[in-house]
Image (spheres, each protein chain N blue to C red):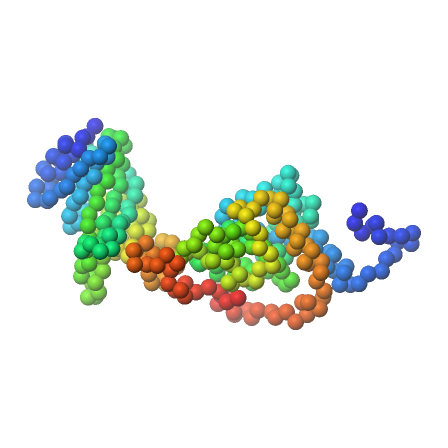
Length: 169
Length: 173
């Protein structure tokens, strides 16, 4: 079994120049990390022989609305080897996109876990976070031509009237 | 029982064409099971031996709209699903009737949110709203009887001027 202490020691050895914020609550480990190392970190967590977080259970996001770093992307992993769940998350702010358009983006982890494909699509659909390098970043639930992101805090509960056309009666 | 009770000694009776057609229509309503969510489970229960929709001549649930007269919309209709429901409704031959089964279909129900159509009467004509969340199977049978009453009151003239939808209009929807 891996404890929070030994896990943090392994991470510090592997990424000596990175600031991690590791906390443990009721046996569940949470890691806060800077977004630029997301792929390296995921590869390490999956392929390290002592950790082997093979299952990517969930990827989702939190909209903080008024914070400068508006979104938090949250990953949930499971290690069969250690029977251990791990939550790690990173804050993202509005950054420059290709084409000069501002937006929220983070690197896709589909190259590490295939399961991340649909989970990242869902997060893109609901929050408008662009996962760079995703093979097929289309909407999951909403119609393809929908222009808004429903789980953002500035989206009204009843939607934008007329944004999804109904058939004529 | 039924028609033969009307026969006197000679085996003849007089009626109108309208009455005969309406009687035969209402006695063999073929439903289109538009089962979208949990109401569909109750709709399936209606077909089982306990409730037995066959007693009312409607056991032939057709999974093609071309052979149906009655669409039972059973479940939450989202905005994304709405064009599909409308397209299937358009594919049904005239004359046709619609039951909006359950609270979600009639009004949006508990889903007062951006993704759910707040009542399917916004895009298809509804003949009967069926309350319940979900309605019990006997409640659906009651709705079927009410639809049969409605069909029984129709005349040929009611359908005379019914507009046929243009083919390209259906495809665009």
